[in-house]
Length: 76
Image (cartoon, rainbow, N blue to C red):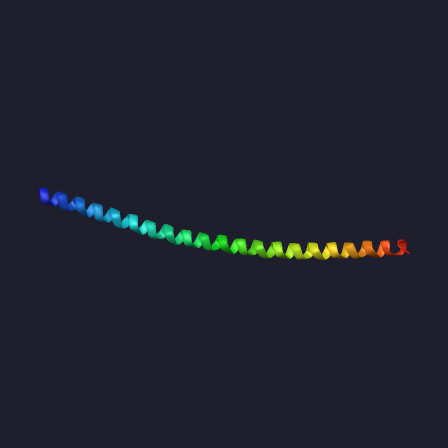
């Protein structure tokens, strides 16, 4: 009878350990997925910042040209 109780306890421990390992695997998979989403988000932000910088540079260049055109007649 005593052997049966120990065997039952061992089965419970093995079952519990398997559940823990399965949970760990699921958590690791979800973390990998979250990491992928974060990297994609940062890549999109980088592209957006590049686009904003390009637009700002273009706008400032246009303003510089406009000012230059306004000042040019005054320089004569």
